[in-house]
Image (tube, rainbow, N blue to C red; front, side):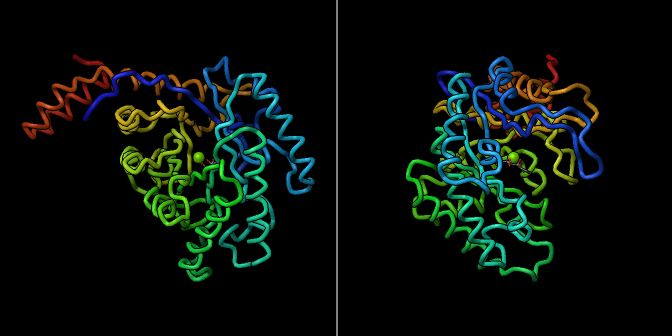
Length: 351
Ligand code: GLO
Ligand code: MG
């Protein structure tokens, strides 16, 4: 697997308040009692998490209807709450998929008025990130795509996304932009479906160093790609801002399953690639984006989060205890059949 880092990384973990959900899905309502955000913050540390991922309206509910002064006051309140708990706001992402103005996309909407809304909301989001003490904003380009190919001009759409990124970079020099690619859902075909697209946008932007990617396991799998290769590509370009570790059982709706639960070996390889590159040693978080099963009882269910974190740490042990000499020997001999069996036995704990 190449060189091992000399000092083992002490991993820090993050998740977003939306990861503690009430179990609604497109076919049925909530099945668990809602749990207020403020109460969620108190859960992080005891669960072994230090970072909070935010949407802009997780920090400032009803952001569209508030004045800049009101927004700033609420963001300061949340900052204090985080400081009190010793928590770090990892990023703040504009929620550009909820409002009526974003039905046909945000930056790529065919309506100039709606594109203006999207840009203004994004710049407010950057202000919120700044106020709350975060260094990054995330663009999950939820509705930047189409249901039918003829409805938008894709070339123009990519130009509009790039123009937006440049405006964001100008707006606040201290906030970096991380793009979270996803190939589909809620649209049929999304723009920026892979990390390759995101990295190309980064290099095309006016400040390539400040534009990175956030890779989610399930999104890479939905694109038919291997998440560890996607991560390796970003790492090779120093463009991995963060990760959303979870899992996905085949090509269906975005499942956000527990990390490693569907593809243990694929999960092992993600940890292997992150470890080898020393990801996390500069303070990067291991972010989770996992959804509790709707069947799970109780108010405020969190075992999907603690379980995914625990699984990650077990896989770190597996990566660190992997026999690299044997790997080298088998690679040199080009005996990949033996290498495969050795990996599987290692994962199963069989000698
Ligand atoms: C949905 C995305 C979403 C984002 C979040 C942060 O498929 O994974 O959960 O990660 O909104 O931008
Ligand atoms: Mg995600």
